[in-house]
Length: 125
Image 1 (tube, rainbow, N blue to C red):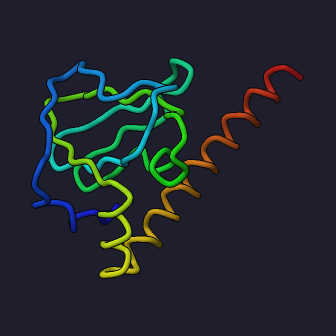
Image 2: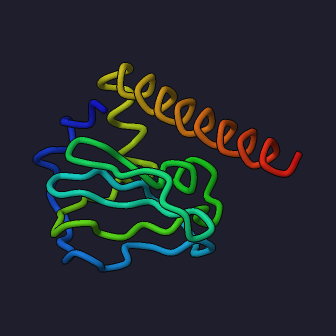
Image 3: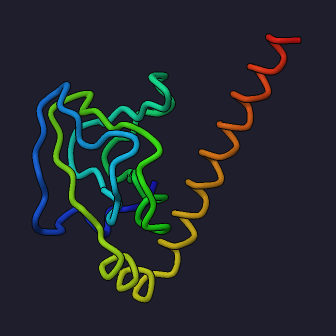
């Protein structure tokens, strides 16, 4: 994922392995970009993805101003930076390919969710 545009963004926050960065159901107003380390994303207690350096997560909540759908937990010591709506909009205007990367990531995550639901339905049949 190409979020290196946030590699030197100020205001990052550090977490230790095992720290909860946010929980499903919490209000959201920003997405987060990973400057160092790895973050695990859990939905309904199941690990759905590990996000590493230059990756991002929490974009759905930022785009919709809706509650978080996943729980994010630091897999390793890590550093993340919050990207609020204004910063996101500014970056997209400077680098339209960033918007495409966000859309690709959303599509990938939706496709993975579809596959998981299909597998679950097949097990029930």
